[in-house]
Length: 334
Length: 301
Image 1: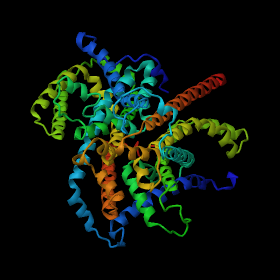
Image 2 (image 1 turned 180 degrees about the vertical axis):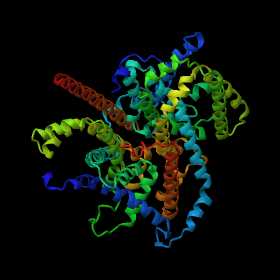
Image 3 (image 1 turned 135 degrees about the vertical axis):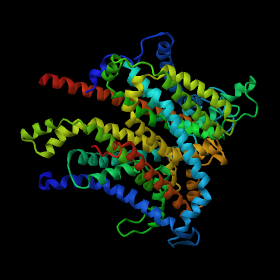
Image 4 (image 1 turned 90 degrees about the vertical axis):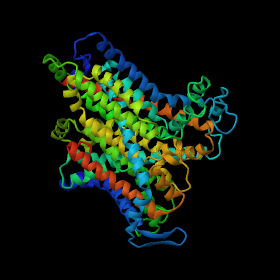
């Protein structure tokens, strides 16, 4: 039966149902989202299409703290996931040996549980008098009124936890492809530890991270920055080798690109972690959108904010792809 | 392809000469670190399983009191829970079947044929993955509420919001992941086997079912597993497109405000265990499959 179809039409026939679905239920709704954002009215009296573009300015004015907070939390969570995930992916790819698949499985397996249940588990573990803080409080190590939940740190930590595999797996895929012969060649050519450079990079990296963390927790950054810089310098000095800086890391950049996108995009739009682990002061733009749609039924503003979020992310991703020059994610190379 | 590189023990990246402290840090630190991260990843799951054996005093399952298997004996012993779980399974099953078929067809077209509009197609596959879930759900919601009577669509399919609108949404966000997964498997596809089949007189239809399909089946199975796990775990998009219908994640979220019943942990544990089992089985099966491929090519040689 297939032979009767002209050959040139086959790809289009294969594409038709799936692409049709995406056009109907992705593209068309995106357009509808834009149209609804330009409605005026309310749910009881009905809406009119008034082309009220002013709502976008209004949305920015009213909700810029939420937008900035989402970008900051998402960015920090992505950075943390990268710092946690890179050594993990590196160890599995280079030192995993015959345990490689077992280790990969251990990284993925927790994510067969509902992410809601995992997040609620964290709530149990980190509760004010829970499994971790309870004993510490009884021993007098931390003050009685110490709280981890309902802080920005808890929200960022929750997002980081939930997205860690999305960072780790692309990094692993990229690192696994690194040719060992290049590293042997580097050793033959006297590549050694990258001492001064490693110490400097480690110190700066640790310092920046501690500074950002201190900003989020709202404490005096001086001491944490100093400690983190020293620790970073030591780690950098001993662990970073010249062949890593010149060969392994550059070759893993496609994984860094894919991993950071796969982490950052869901992180920015997340509202579940902010809802379950945070408080009113840690809400993100996703919380606003969700509440505006489902609780307040202010469809125009909710749509405008969604549209801003979508447009910002897609433009950001395209610029990022242009800068890093990799088209792997969009499938350009296929 | 990389078998030669991976089979031999990694020479290690210890490019510096093995000198004292640095070497020891290198040998010990990374494995210890990996152990730490893996435990960190596993901890919440272990807590979930542990608390499924709890006998909580009040409604909230927050402190471990006594060991009990009551909840395990009556996993649906909460009003609405059974319905929510079966809604989830129904949607996940439907979304898996539909999105796997549609996505595999797209992947075949993208890898096997040259055609105009390939760039646009790739873009359209990529966009849903780079749109935050809350936006995907929101735009579907705006479409559903404002298209109460479109000419071509029968009444009640798109509105009111119910299990059907959830299914539509889940198929939509699963398609892209299926395409990417199947495409990865098609990338190194041995085209010569198909050509051989055609040379031996098979038509395209027979070639597809006898040669192409068995070869891409592992990729299709992997894609289906991924789609199923994405669908059954989805909360964000579902919450915006479900109306009054409960799925398991919606039920959990609603319950989290009042305190999670132990039964939720039991069902969470069952889902976790089945997923692990499924993946182990499919991995073993794929390994056997590739071993068979390998030994058959050896015989040909």
